[in-house]
Amino acid sequence: MAVGLKKRRRIQLMALGGAMLVIATGIIGYAMRDGIEFFRSPSQIVDEPPGAGERFRLGGLVAEGSVVRGTDGVITFDITDGGATQAVVFEGIPPDLFREGQGVIASGAIENDTFIASEILAKHDENYMPKEVADALKEQGLYRPEGDEDPGS
Image (tube, rainbow, N blue to C red; front, side):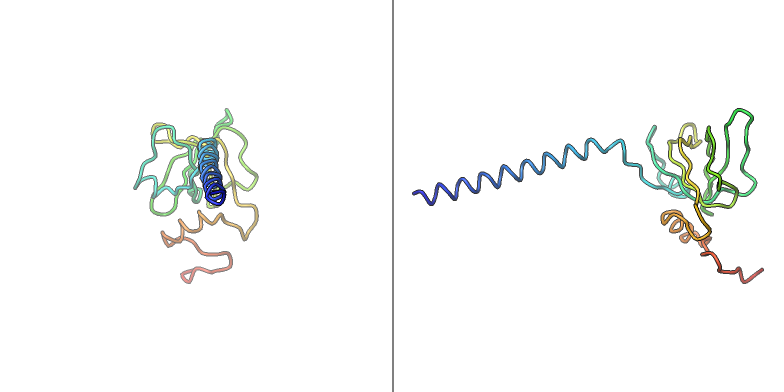
């Protein structure tokens, strides 16, 4: 009978350990829910509009001729992926490499059809473009890696 007791105790400990693992995973997921920001391109926003106040990262290229710098430190510009364009407002100092035609990722939320950015990230050298931005531009047929010349030029 002692063998059956050891086996039952082992099963109880394994069940307890499994339950603790599930609870710990749930707590970690709950704690991280506000810190997770998903990436979206302007085309994805058009296809599936985000919920009110939902924070996410918006990526693409800064549209040519769209950057307007206000005297109060507010910058407005458009992010495009070739299929759609999203208006963006950012208050603060943008990265040094922020300019028209460059890849950019902005963190924030949409309010009244305008993306209010709390942070802007720009590419940091000639060869880098965030994978998500490159993938979104490839889907639209606009992405050419550095060094690829346009056959029409």
